[in-house]
Figure 1 (cartoon, rainbow, N blue to C red):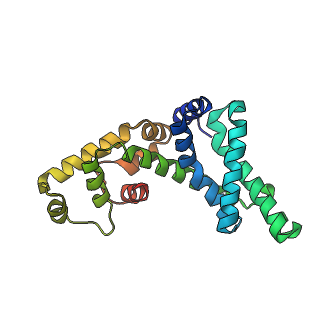
Figure 2: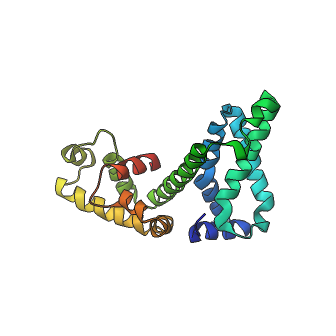
Figure 3: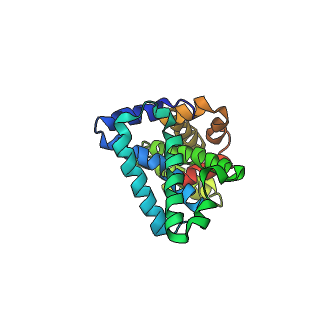
Length: 213
């Protein structure tokens, strides 16, 4: 995995007992764990049990992590191992053999990588979104509704001039881009910048922000 200074900082703070950092790590990677559980077709109860075991293992290994940037890979590998164990216990060895790490089709591995990137971006967006003022959160939430809400209706809902909506939206997106987690993703992958471009209020940015909200 790429070197992510934001994740490195979260791990360092979590080691020191920072509860906010721990919560941010869980929020950031919960979707990755859940997506792998889906690939193994676990029930919701089994998936929740796997998630709890993964985070308990992570706590016990937190002080021994030498490369925090490798955390997503460790989580994915450990989750697959736990899922395989659950499948073995509930469906038998033959079923478990179909889901061993080395036998997972490449398309599933690619899907997991895509899920990880999506989880990182959505978690970062959620974190950044909470730093906006309440009025700006409300505006951005309406702007990401589907189907799009006309500016005249937004103006009526929020009691703000139509002409101020566009400039305010641009300022919000600029603020989101400056958030450390977002800045790290954009720096590591220039493609992420397209999701946050001020000139594209709809499209990919709409999907990402709607999921973040």
